[in-house]
Image (cartoon, rainbow, N blue to C red; front, side):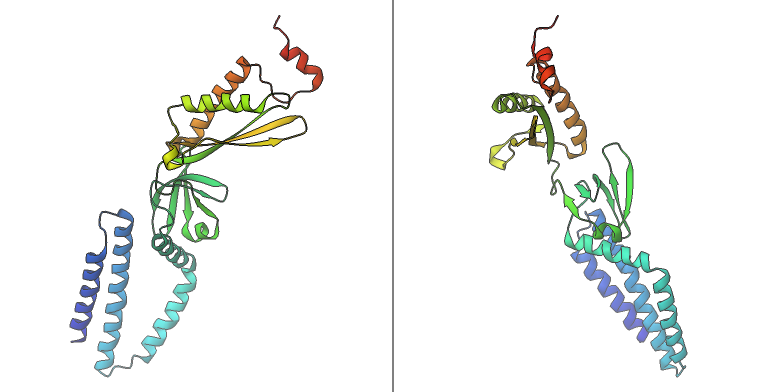
Length: 254
């Protein structure tokens, strides 16, 4: 009867999990499968101890041994258990999912796999970084896409202080608008914004804009930087220079 009750209870719990789980989600499917195995082990282990107790077999030593064994195993598998718990927290909190671009400390990449133990990121240079979930939760996690492919990018251009800021901003804006992977949509608040900072001999213009592919962000920024530099050369917009050199750069080419 004890065995039958344990069997029915385990099956009932698994049935509830099957009914309430979205099986199209690969990550949740993996978690539920692990949880089902955990329920089976615990349920049948308790049933086994109760059966021995029913037949008047002294289970005190067995229970004590199991407790000590569990304690030893717990210490030995501390990191593994911590990673599992962290993985459950990540899934339940819906911090990020596969395909999102996240920033973790100094690392940034596309989430390619999330398991109970580890999370895998692919960086823009196609390196795969495997991070234990316990380490991941100790860091500051920034979801740069929020479930979408688009993300905010930033570039800083430094020009000599003598140049007109609106002219430089207009030039940069034209380059951004001409790039096929720069997203501008005011209804969705996808705008180009500038932050201007005055330095001693320079004007720094930080440009904030949206790109359509978070995974290609670094390559898109590189292409835009090259185009802006070409425009600067055409319009004779110079980087910060000593005053004695400005005449040579601004004068006619020989």
